[in-house]
Length: 266
Image (cartoon, rainbow, N blue to C red):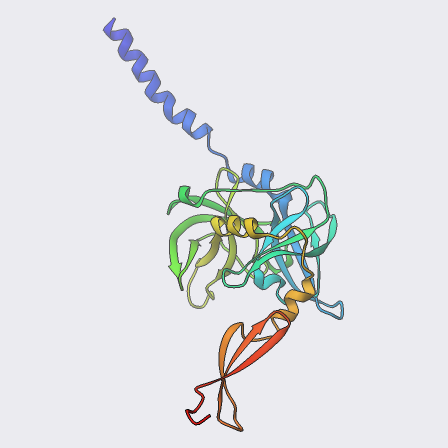
């Protein structure tokens, strides 16, 4: 009986690595299953002139698209192009967060391909990841790398990755090998300063923004006009004529100026 038992154990040990490797998807598999949900976003100004290109990805079959806030912040109109050549005008913005550089825009579509969001807690340094986007307008460009670090920069969480990204990749998905979005490609370090230093907003921030998304899209023009004001919340301003200090606040369509440090005699 003992020789037979040893033989079974040896066979099982050799079988384990084979079954493990078979469960892993290749880059080709992930791209094949994901690329149809990645879109090119073409931004136009108030004169209808094309001003910028960016990336995004669908997160629902009815046309909810995640991208970067900086991609759409100057947009007066935008067109979304799918990998199959279909075009959709952007109906508006469902939610945005300028601090985290994320936005959710809406197109009117049905039965569209979409991606699922992963869990950031399951992402580890060294994990293999894939970026898909439209750098310099080159649609469907794929790059891969690893998670270099999970960082807190300026009180914000970022995924640092070696997956190469260029202008136009902004807003595209960073995918794990289970075909789930773990981050949104957002920014990179100038090549003259460092190689393969690219950063993505974690998928948990997208989940939070989707929860806050309104049912009716807000026009793109309202996002653009909001950014014509260089201050939000409260900003201290000193008059060059009177020398008085004012607290300037922007609330909706109104600006408020409050005189601060009022002299006791006044």
